[in-house]
Image (cartoon, rainbow, N blue to C red; front, top):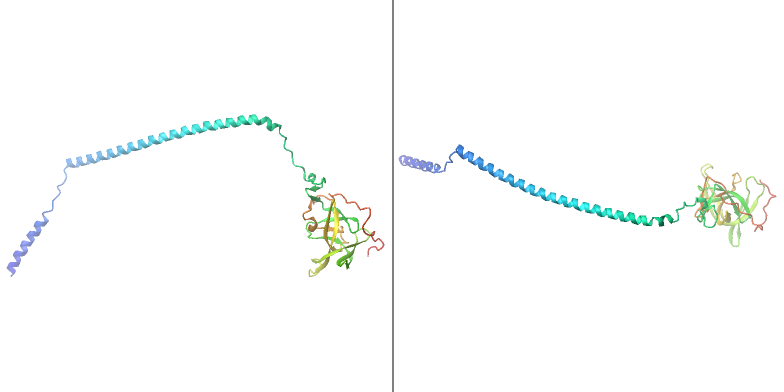
Length: 283
């Protein structure tokens, strides 16, 4: 058996060696063949480079033509603009005499001169008030000095011996107006509007003071208005009347650098009420 196996193995190995030797073997290049291959590659690269340079030159020439067109268009636009400017200057020269003959602009009038009713102390339809002004009270037909205070919400008037009573089915208030520095005492009657609570910071604990508010007709300058006054004792104050924002709103502006801007109202010849009570004197 072993004698038969050995010839078989020998025959198989011969067959396998014959199959392996059938692959072609590339012969090595000679020096001449290598030089020829390099020369051909160099020629192909040179041709490609020449084609690329030609393409770049073509594009550069096209861009140069475009740039020339742009420069030509710009020159045309500059010429057109120059013509337009020349036409505008020509029209301006023609219209110059008309402009020169026009009425020159005037400065606006000063604040004190602006008025709608001829009063130089008004600003449009509003009065100009100083820190102090004269005020006429219709109820007693008298003129008093008033302090203008933009920090106060409501106006107030000096009042003593306040009495609330009913008149024609409505509540009224009667009080004595005692101006500081005067011996005269004026009895005033006016409709009672409401009561207000005023915080007294000077009192211990900051208690509230309940004060009546009346409505009276007064005159400042040439303007007559019906306004509300809080009744409080101001006999220790310099001015018996204080005008607050409730009076100033929509009718006046304040110039704190001046006093008595508005003219002093005149007392009506025939007062509507009795003469002031001068026999009582101060308490």
